[in-house]
Image (cartoon, rainbow, N blue to C red):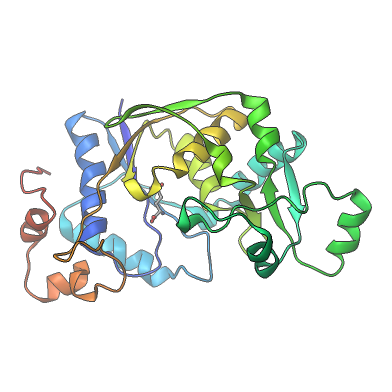
Length: 278
Ligand code: GLU
């Protein structure tokens, strides 16, 4: 049974690029007689707003999409992420990092993947318990994965992308990724990996901007004993000038298109899904 999901973060209104992504997941489930799930990735209270979660569900319904209830709101499942963190801590793979962003920026090697920020140089990895306790008294910490230790434990890993085939995972280039912080006691990498497993997702469809991140997810699956779904990273819709759609493209939010008189069928056509049946 194929199980797919659309997993938006409610940080703004959905645009045409989101509709494309949602249609991709919906169609993949539909064609296989499978299940389609919706997950609201609202772990960051500073950036996510409940009204955007409501608005996005309304927009998706307007488009004609239906999904299984209940919708999983990540903000309600902190205990699941805490359990995964605890497991990694027990394996000796999690350590507190007290560095400020500025300190990291000054020390870090430039990162291949700009979106992910600089690779952490590992400053806090080797601190003693005493040094940790002293720093904890004065500074907040984030929790990082000991990447080299994790890779040594799992050995070489791979995952399968439906378009590009077998991919050898290379999570090491991300360095010691942050898996939890004080204000957000989980992270994108951790919660997406845990949730795809808990929800029984068998085919992860998402934009190709997240292709590289899958290497980290594959590593976390191996460490946490979770199954590995299939992946289909789809192209990103671009505007007439070749830029990918983003929050700044206000005229292409589903809201704006609807207010401008477009029908759900028009939007499906604009996204290239005119043949999609419901
Ligand atoms: N929440 C992520 C986003 O909106 C997508 C996560 C995923 O599909 O893995 O970009």
